[in-house]
Image (cartoon, rainbow over all chains, first blue to last red; front, side):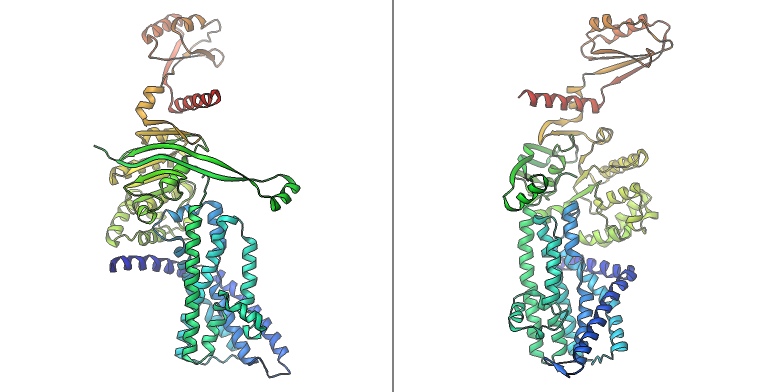
Length: 270
Length: 345
């Protein structure tokens, strides 16, 4: 039993390891990736500076806490992004999925752990560059609280998993839709809106805030930043619990979808 | 004694295809009106067995259903009807357990990760198959030395030539010493040099691992070199399933003699000879400097025919070439016969 578990863990750890090193091999490509995010961060920070010029606070956010929020939102965005839905669509379209299905490995886990590996690589490569940029150019104050940062790290791991699971879900839908450009576009827009990546969800009217409670996107950016910015341990643990619930729900949906998809799999020819 | 490793009973696979209406108006209609659906039987109620330690060739024209059968046997597709038992398991429902014991090498889609060095792909596969590190390293080193792969190991897969890639891909499919190895057009696109190396590799693997091999290929030379059993498929149905030798004995009816002449035989008329021996055909080739005679050797007295030819072309024969019908011709004849039977029906 223990050996079986060890083998399983080794299997998935090797996927994480190989993808982590991929980030380091293609470092320039990943570094270029964050430049666009830094531009986005800079632009939105200046917009907020202009808006808050005459009022010290908006919805409990001062300009410094808002800049802080936007900086961490940029970091999480840079870490969690993935190409999984596109890759799954390509696997199905080209029939390359065959190569994965003949391996004694779960197709969903393969992409999930690949995303975890790539995201951990990005944490290692990108995140400190974004923090240095924020500290140097925007005078961001990083107060170091070991407990908050530890919980924040766990919360980010959940974010990575949730975003990866959403991408897998969209990817799996191409078993039926074949092309999922529309779905992917809708996902990126809804995700940007409800994850809190553009502005904190506190700024939204109540109705939108309530809708966000029923969507997994909130757990990707807004909740991890709340964990970092809140000092109440119980509230932080509760946020982690919500993330864990979304991980489980999406995992359940994906597994059901996978079984249905594989039963209807039709790879004709080649 | 050999046991059955795979037995398939009344196997069928039907694909649903939606018919789209043509043109802009048709495309608009497609949005609002439910499209017509037709079922296409890729595999149509077939049964067969594969014996342990055999090499079975799965043959048939494009679209015959070979790849669909392979995909059902590898547990990727679920049959619409019928059952498959392979090594005591149902490939589709016991997929996770089943795929640990099979190896698959697809000529068109290499399973190596294109952006990783070959060795990293191998290591990753060893983890995925949960192989013991020591025995894996030992076996990998043996394979590397045997097939001179040292120089390729640290190259990223995307930088390998097709010949190198196919060899590395074959090795990837046997790292876990599978009991059953599927080779789906493994030499596609290879030149004759690499093709021969590849065939040599497959023979050695068979010897080393005592594995059962199922091979699909359009190259009949490969089939003749490797396979002892043949399953011939056309339009989703099996039209022949037995040993290669039986196939040859049953269908090898056309033999040929080609006479190469020193001087062109412009006046030669073969009709008399054709009638006397009931030959299939006599053809004059290359400006009458070659005579091709085709016949069924079981139905004629070959000795008499040759002596008649020697008398007819006295002092004019430069060379005589004998040939039996190629496997290609045999299969072509079976397929043509099958098609005309279908039309008759």
